[in-house]
Image (cartoon, rainbow, N blue to C red; front, side, top):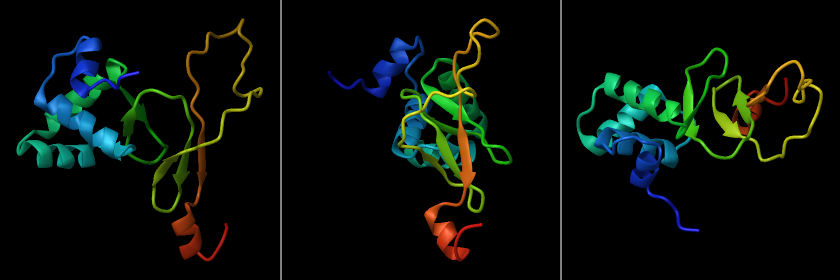
Length: 142
């Protein structure tokens, strides 16, 4: 199966292909889980000039079109990743890093509410703890 280009993804989502949109998609593809400020800096590196408001508008449009997924760990800034596979996240309480889990979701009562009461479209699970670097720096587990 051929890989779609970012321009093709934008067109398929009904969006115009613009340089800011391409720069944001490239930044998020290259480094998932970035916040808007970091995406803005990386977009400026690619484009030279782009306003922060333009990047926020692009993030909103790409998320609304289903091309990006916005995750918002409690107590931290929203982060963005490409939409696609459904996965959970690990968030480090010390440094704030966000990592995808590599384990498949196991069905359970908290992920399978009674269908008659609510039409579930999506579930997010976030695991909180310490990444290997922070666990090592703190001298073990807490």
